[in-house]
Image (cartoon, rainbow, N blue to C red; front, top):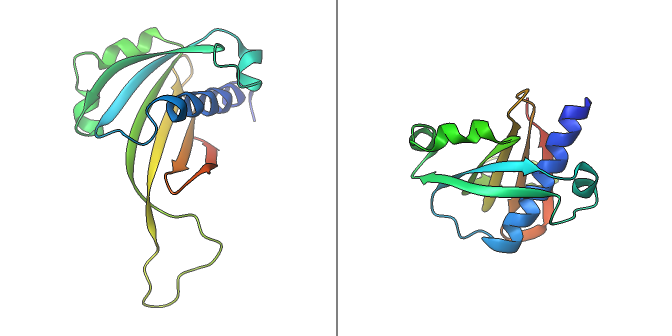
Amino acid sequence: MSDNTSLALLLARWFDARLHDSVGFCLRETRLYGLEVLDVDGLASHDPLAARMSFLAAAADQDALLHHPDAPRAREFDAAALVVVEWRPAVSGRAPRPGDFTARRRARVADVVLVADGEGATVLRFEHDPDFIVLAPAS
């Protein structure tokens, strides 16, 4: 894992915590944020002041958001974050039985990408179990 990937993971986790403290799962549209890193060590210790997030734009879906007139402003930041609340298959320890459907739950998904080098991370949190967080480097 490179230092940049580690920074992307730290920033994604920090950003998700700020979203959870503020908007929770009450998002009706896809949102774009710009992120500015102020203290890398503070990201690791989950300091709320370790970075700054700026709301840039919102649209009905990801495609419309990427064509929004304010979307190019994301390049002015250390990282850009795309956030959506959608229905996702719930994380389960067992495979569904034949004829069963995988349970779907509302989840907040945040994709964070470092502007300088394109390294990124995805963080997912389910509404029905908000203490369980899925964090992965973006491929």
